[in-house]
Length: 282
Ligand SMILES: Cc1cc2nc3c(=O)[nH]c(=O)nc-3n(C[C@H](O)[C@H](O)[C@H](O)COP(=O)(O)OP(=O)(O)OC[C@H]3O[C@@H](n4cnc5c(N)ncnc54)[C@H](O)[C@@H]3O)c2cc1C
Image 1 (cartoon, rainbow, N blue to C red):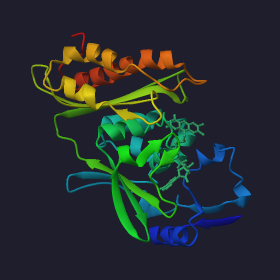
Image 2 (cartoon, rainbow, N blue to C red):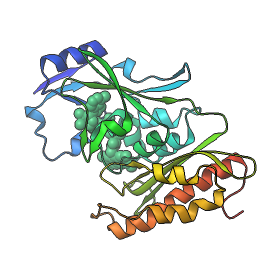
Image 3 (cartoon, rainbow, N blue to C red):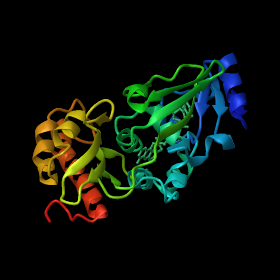
Protein backbone atom coordinates (compact mmCIF):
# COMPACT_ATOMS: atom_id res chain seq x y z
CA UNK A 1 0.00 0.00 0.00
CA UNK A 2 1.19 3.49 -0.85
CA UNK A 3 -0.12 6.08 1.62
CA UNK A 4 0.60 9.81 1.68
CA UNK A 5 -0.61 11.95 4.56
CA UNK A 6 -0.49 15.33 2.84
CA UNK A 7 0.02 18.64 4.69
CA UNK A 8 -0.45 21.07 1.80
CA UNK A 9 -2.71 21.43 -1.22
CA UNK A 10 0.37 21.56 -3.50
CA UNK A 11 1.51 18.19 -2.17
CA UNK A 12 -1.91 16.67 -2.95
CA UNK A 13 -2.04 18.12 -6.47
CA UNK A 14 1.49 17.02 -7.22
CA UNK A 15 0.73 13.44 -6.16
CA UNK A 16 -2.52 13.38 -8.16
CA UNK A 17 -0.73 14.70 -11.23
CA UNK A 18 2.00 12.03 -10.95
CA UNK A 19 -0.46 9.25 -10.03
CA UNK A 20 -3.98 10.06 -11.32
CA UNK A 21 -5.14 6.61 -10.18
CA UNK A 22 -4.45 7.62 -6.55
CA UNK A 23 -7.51 7.78 -4.32
CA UNK A 24 -8.22 10.79 -2.12
CA UNK A 25 -9.37 9.96 1.38
CA UNK A 26 -10.60 12.47 3.95
CA UNK A 27 -12.73 11.17 6.86
CA UNK A 28 -13.00 7.68 5.26
CA UNK A 29 -16.60 7.31 6.53
CA UNK A 30 -17.89 6.56 3.02
CA UNK A 31 -14.76 4.93 1.65
CA UNK A 32 -14.30 2.38 4.41
CA UNK A 33 -17.75 1.00 3.64
CA UNK A 34 -17.04 0.47 -0.08
CA UNK A 35 -17.01 -3.31 -0.60
CA UNK A 36 -15.31 -2.91 -4.00
CA UNK A 37 -12.15 -1.39 -2.48
CA UNK A 38 -9.11 -3.50 -1.71
CA UNK A 39 -7.30 -1.00 0.57
CA UNK A 40 -3.90 -2.71 0.18
CA UNK A 41 -3.95 -2.22 -3.57
CA UNK A 42 -4.87 1.47 -3.60
CA UNK A 43 -2.56 4.50 -3.67
CA UNK A 44 -4.01 6.75 -0.95
CA UNK A 45 -3.73 10.51 -0.60
CA UNK A 46 -5.04 11.48 2.84
CA UNK A 47 -6.19 15.13 2.88
CA UNK A 48 -7.60 15.19 6.40
CA UNK A 49 -4.51 17.00 7.81
CA UNK A 50 -4.38 19.72 5.14
CA UNK A 51 -5.30 22.74 7.29
CA UNK A 52 -5.96 24.95 4.24
CA UNK A 53 -8.83 22.62 3.26
CA UNK A 54 -10.62 22.95 6.59
CA UNK A 55 -11.32 26.69 6.79
CA UNK A 56 -14.84 28.13 6.87
CA UNK A 57 -14.79 31.83 5.95
CA UNK A 58 -16.90 34.75 4.72
CA UNK A 59 -15.34 37.26 2.33
CA UNK A 60 -16.49 39.65 -0.41
CA UNK A 61 -20.11 38.53 -0.16
CA UNK A 62 -19.25 34.82 -0.43
CA UNK A 63 -19.11 31.98 2.06
CA UNK A 64 -16.33 29.47 1.41
CA UNK A 65 -16.18 26.09 3.15
CA UNK A 66 -13.04 24.04 2.69
CA UNK A 67 -13.67 20.52 1.39
CA UNK A 68 -12.15 18.87 4.47
CA UNK A 69 -14.32 20.85 6.91
CA UNK A 70 -16.17 18.32 9.04
CA UNK A 71 -19.88 18.18 9.80
CA UNK A 72 -19.03 18.93 13.40
CA UNK A 73 -17.24 22.15 12.40
CA UNK A 74 -20.16 23.17 10.17
CA UNK A 75 -22.78 22.48 12.84
CA UNK A 76 -20.78 24.62 15.29
CA UNK A 77 -20.45 27.63 12.96
CA UNK A 78 -23.43 29.69 14.10
CA UNK A 79 -23.36 32.23 11.24
CA UNK A 80 -23.77 29.60 8.50
CA UNK A 81 -27.27 29.29 6.98
CA UNK A 82 -29.63 27.29 9.19
CA UNK A 83 -30.34 24.71 6.46
CA UNK A 84 -26.68 23.75 6.24
CA UNK A 85 -26.21 23.57 10.00
CA UNK A 86 -29.37 21.49 10.35
CA UNK A 87 -28.11 19.12 7.66
CA UNK A 88 -24.73 18.88 9.44
CA UNK A 89 -26.43 18.09 12.75
CA UNK A 90 -28.46 15.33 11.08
CA UNK A 91 -25.48 13.42 9.63
CA UNK A 92 -24.80 10.07 11.31
CA UNK A 93 -23.56 10.00 14.88
CA UNK A 94 -21.12 12.33 16.67
CA UNK A 95 -18.25 10.04 15.61
CA UNK A 96 -19.27 10.34 11.95
CA UNK A 97 -19.70 14.12 12.19
CA UNK A 98 -16.27 14.59 13.74
CA UNK A 99 -14.69 12.55 10.96
CA UNK A 100 -16.86 13.00 7.84
CA UNK A 101 -16.31 16.01 5.60
CA UNK A 102 -18.52 18.12 3.38
CA UNK A 103 -16.18 17.41 0.44
CA UNK A 104 -16.44 13.65 0.95
CA UNK A 105 -20.22 13.95 1.05
CA UNK A 106 -20.31 15.82 -2.29
CA UNK A 107 -17.73 13.59 -4.03
CA UNK A 108 -19.45 10.39 -2.89
CA UNK A 109 -22.55 11.72 -4.72
CA UNK A 110 -25.25 9.73 -2.99
CA UNK A 111 -28.86 10.59 -3.96
CA UNK A 112 -29.55 11.05 -0.24
CA UNK A 113 -26.39 12.95 0.77
CA UNK A 114 -27.54 15.41 3.42
CA UNK A 115 -25.16 18.14 2.32
CA UNK A 116 -26.52 18.44 -1.20
CA UNK A 117 -30.08 19.84 -0.87
CA UNK A 118 -29.07 22.83 1.30
CA UNK A 119 -26.12 23.64 -0.96
CA UNK A 120 -28.28 23.43 -4.09
CA UNK A 121 -30.79 25.79 -2.48
CA UNK A 122 -27.93 28.17 -1.65
CA UNK A 123 -26.75 28.29 -5.30
CA UNK A 124 -23.46 26.67 -4.34
CA UNK A 125 -20.47 26.27 -6.63
CA UNK A 126 -17.56 23.88 -6.24
CA UNK A 127 -13.89 24.80 -6.67
CA UNK A 128 -11.83 22.06 -8.31
CA UNK A 129 -8.04 22.20 -8.49
CA UNK A 130 -5.32 20.35 -10.34
CA UNK A 131 -1.78 21.30 -11.34
CA UNK A 132 -3.42 22.67 -14.52
CA UNK A 133 -5.32 25.30 -12.50
CA UNK A 134 -8.60 25.92 -10.67
CA UNK A 135 -12.06 25.68 -12.22
CA UNK A 136 -15.48 26.44 -10.74
CA UNK A 137 -18.72 24.63 -11.46
CA UNK A 138 -22.26 25.04 -10.16
CA UNK A 139 -22.90 22.15 -7.77
CA UNK A 140 -25.78 21.03 -10.01
CA UNK A 141 -23.28 20.50 -12.86
CA UNK A 142 -20.74 18.77 -10.64
CA UNK A 143 -23.20 16.03 -9.64
CA UNK A 144 -23.74 13.87 -12.71
CA UNK A 145 -25.57 10.89 -11.21
CA UNK A 146 -25.52 8.35 -8.40
CA UNK A 147 -21.85 8.09 -7.39
CA UNK A 148 -20.84 10.09 -10.49
CA UNK A 149 -19.33 13.58 -10.49
CA UNK A 150 -17.47 15.84 -12.91
CA UNK A 151 -14.25 15.48 -10.86
CA UNK A 152 -11.30 14.56 -13.10
CA UNK A 153 -8.74 11.95 -12.05
CA UNK A 154 -6.07 14.53 -11.17
CA UNK A 155 -8.46 16.96 -9.46
CA UNK A 156 -9.09 17.77 -5.82
CA UNK A 157 -12.29 19.39 -4.57
CA UNK A 158 -10.94 22.45 -2.78
CA UNK A 159 -14.06 24.10 -1.44
CA UNK A 160 -17.74 24.79 -1.82
CA UNK A 161 -18.84 28.43 -2.07
CA UNK A 162 -22.15 30.29 -2.06
CA UNK A 163 -23.33 33.89 -1.77
CA UNK A 164 -23.94 35.32 1.70
CA UNK A 165 -27.72 35.32 2.19
CA UNK A 166 -29.77 38.50 2.08
CA UNK A 167 -30.75 39.45 5.64
CA UNK A 168 -34.45 38.71 4.97
CA UNK A 169 -33.78 35.24 3.58
CA UNK A 170 -34.46 32.22 5.77
CA UNK A 171 -33.37 28.65 5.14
CA UNK A 172 -34.36 25.27 6.58
CA UNK A 173 -33.56 21.60 6.02
CA UNK A 174 -35.82 18.67 6.80
CA UNK A 175 -34.84 15.01 6.69
CA UNK A 176 -37.21 12.07 6.82
CA UNK A 177 -35.59 8.76 7.74
CA UNK A 178 -36.93 5.40 8.83
CA UNK A 179 -36.13 5.96 12.48
CA UNK A 180 -35.05 8.69 14.85
CA UNK A 181 -31.35 8.92 15.58
CA UNK A 182 -28.55 7.91 13.24
CA UNK A 183 -30.14 7.11 9.88
CA UNK A 184 -29.69 7.84 6.21
CA UNK A 185 -32.47 9.97 4.69
CA UNK A 186 -35.37 8.49 2.80
CA UNK A 187 -36.20 11.97 1.55
CA UNK A 188 -34.81 15.37 2.44
CA UNK A 189 -35.66 18.92 1.45
CA UNK A 190 -34.11 22.36 1.75
CA UNK A 191 -35.84 25.71 1.30
CA UNK A 192 -34.49 29.26 1.06
CA UNK A 193 -37.14 31.94 1.02
CA UNK A 194 -37.59 35.69 1.35
CA UNK A 195 -41.14 36.76 2.27
CA UNK A 196 -42.91 40.10 2.18
CA UNK A 197 -44.59 41.30 5.37
CA UNK A 198 -48.02 40.34 3.95
CA UNK A 199 -47.04 36.69 3.38
CA UNK A 200 -46.08 36.78 -0.29
CA UNK A 201 -43.10 34.82 -1.57
CA UNK A 202 -40.53 37.22 -2.99
CA UNK A 203 -37.69 34.79 -3.64
CA UNK A 204 -37.69 31.02 -3.36
CA UNK A 205 -35.26 28.13 -3.79
CA UNK A 206 -36.37 24.55 -3.16
CA UNK A 207 -34.39 21.36 -3.46
CA UNK A 208 -35.16 17.78 -2.66
CA UNK A 209 -33.06 14.65 -2.13
CA UNK A 210 -34.06 11.00 -2.34
CA UNK A 211 -36.51 11.15 -5.25
CA UNK A 212 -33.99 11.15 -8.08
CA UNK A 213 -30.48 9.87 -8.82
CA UNK A 214 -29.16 13.31 -7.90
CA UNK A 215 -30.85 15.77 -5.50
CA UNK A 216 -32.75 18.36 -7.53
CA UNK A 217 -33.55 22.06 -7.49
CA UNK A 218 -37.27 22.37 -8.24
CA UNK A 219 -37.07 25.35 -10.59
CA UNK A 220 -40.61 24.96 -11.95
CA UNK A 221 -42.02 25.08 -8.41
CA UNK A 222 -39.93 28.14 -7.60
CA UNK A 223 -41.13 29.98 -10.71
CA UNK A 224 -44.75 28.99 -10.10
CA UNK A 225 -44.67 30.33 -6.54
CA UNK A 226 -42.65 33.54 -6.73
CA UNK A 227 -44.97 36.49 -6.19
CA UNK A 228 -47.76 34.29 -4.81
CA UNK A 229 -49.12 34.04 -1.29
CA UNK A 230 -47.47 31.41 0.90
CA UNK A 231 -50.76 29.41 1.02
CA UNK A 232 -50.12 28.38 -2.62
CA UNK A 233 -47.11 26.28 -1.64
CA UNK A 234 -48.77 23.07 -0.40
CA UNK A 235 -51.01 22.39 -3.45
CA UNK A 236 -48.27 23.39 -5.91
CA UNK A 237 -45.75 21.07 -4.27
CA UNK A 238 -48.10 18.07 -4.39
CA UNK A 239 -48.77 18.69 -8.08
CA UNK A 240 -45.12 18.92 -8.99
CA UNK A 241 -43.32 16.04 -7.30
CA UNK A 242 -44.90 13.15 -9.20
CA UNK A 243 -42.21 10.65 -10.06
CA UNK A 244 -39.33 8.90 -8.32
CA UNK A 245 -36.90 6.43 -9.89
CA UNK A 246 -35.65 5.42 -6.45
CA UNK A 247 -37.31 2.37 -4.99
CA UNK A 248 -34.97 0.55 -2.63
CA UNK A 249 -34.51 -1.17 0.71
CA UNK A 250 -35.05 2.09 2.59
CA UNK A 251 -38.37 3.07 0.98
CA UNK A 252 -40.57 2.42 -2.02
CA UNK A 253 -40.92 5.02 -4.76
CA UNK A 254 -44.55 5.54 -3.70
CA UNK A 255 -43.51 6.27 -0.11
CA UNK A 256 -40.82 8.71 -1.26
CA UNK A 257 -43.38 10.52 -3.41
CA UNK A 258 -45.78 10.74 -0.50
CA UNK A 259 -43.14 12.12 1.84
CA UNK A 260 -41.32 14.57 -0.47
CA UNK A 261 -44.04 17.27 -0.54
CA UNK A 262 -44.38 16.98 3.24
CA UNK A 263 -40.65 17.54 3.68
CA UNK A 264 -40.75 20.60 1.42
CA UNK A 265 -43.79 22.04 3.21
CA UNK A 266 -42.20 21.49 6.60
CA UNK A 267 -38.96 23.15 5.56
CA UNK A 268 -40.94 26.07 4.12
CA UNK A 269 -42.99 26.33 7.29
CA UNK A 270 -39.83 26.31 9.42
CA UNK A 271 -38.48 29.26 7.39
CA UNK A 272 -41.71 31.19 7.83
CA UNK A 273 -41.85 30.57 11.56
CA UNK A 274 -38.29 31.78 11.87
CA UNK A 275 -39.01 34.95 9.93
CA UNK A 276 -41.95 35.70 12.25
CA UNK A 277 -44.86 35.45 9.77
CA UNK A 278 -46.44 32.41 11.51
CA UNK A 279 -46.79 28.91 10.02
CA UNK A 280 -48.82 27.83 6.99
CA UNK A 281 -51.73 27.02 9.20
CA UNK A 282 -51.61 30.41 10.95
C1 LIG B 1 -22.50 5.09 10.16
C2 LIG B 1 -22.57 6.12 9.05
C3 LIG B 1 -23.61 7.03 9.05
C4 LIG B 1 -23.71 7.97 8.04
N1 LIG B 1 -24.74 8.87 8.05
C5 LIG B 1 -24.86 9.77 7.06
C6 LIG B 1 -25.96 10.68 7.07
O1 LIG B 1 -26.80 10.69 7.96
N2 LIG B 1 -26.03 11.57 6.02
C7 LIG B 1 -25.11 11.60 5.01
O2 LIG B 1 -25.24 12.42 4.10
N3 LIG B 1 -24.06 10.75 5.01
C8 LIG B 1 -23.92 9.85 5.99
N4 LIG B 1 -22.86 8.97 5.97
C9 LIG B 1 -21.90 9.03 4.87
C10 LIG B 1 -20.62 9.86 5.17
O3 LIG B 1 -20.36 9.94 6.53
C11 LIG B 1 -20.69 11.27 4.59
O4 LIG B 1 -21.01 11.26 3.23
C12 LIG B 1 -19.36 12.04 4.82
O5 LIG B 1 -19.60 13.40 4.62
C13 LIG B 1 -18.24 11.57 3.90
O6 LIG B 1 -17.08 12.33 4.15
P1 LIG B 1 -15.64 11.66 4.32
O7 LIG B 1 -14.69 12.77 4.57
O8 LIG B 1 -15.68 10.58 5.34
O9 LIG B 1 -15.43 11.04 2.87
P2 LIG B 1 -14.44 9.86 2.44
O10 LIG B 1 -15.03 8.55 2.82
O11 LIG B 1 -13.05 10.14 2.88
O12 LIG B 1 -14.50 10.04 0.85
C14 LIG B 1 -15.73 9.84 0.13
C15 LIG B 1 -15.44 9.99 -1.38
O13 LIG B 1 -15.09 11.32 -1.70
C16 LIG B 1 -13.76 11.38 -2.28
N5 LIG B 1 -13.21 12.63 -1.70
C17 LIG B 1 -13.24 13.02 -0.41
N6 LIG B 1 -12.79 14.28 -0.29
C18 LIG B 1 -12.45 14.69 -1.53
C19 LIG B 1 -11.92 15.91 -2.06
N7 LIG B 1 -11.68 17.00 -1.30
N8 LIG B 1 -11.69 15.98 -3.39
C20 LIG B 1 -11.95 14.93 -4.20
N9 LIG B 1 -12.45 13.75 -3.76
C21 LIG B 1 -12.71 13.64 -2.43
C22 LIG B 1 -13.08 10.09 -1.87
O14 LIG B 1 -12.10 9.70 -2.81
C23 LIG B 1 -14.27 9.13 -1.88
O15 LIG B 1 -14.57 8.73 -3.19
C24 LIG B 1 -22.74 8.01 6.99
C25 LIG B 1 -21.67 7.09 7.00
C26 LIG B 1 -21.60 6.15 8.02
C27 LIG B 1 -20.46 5.18 8.03
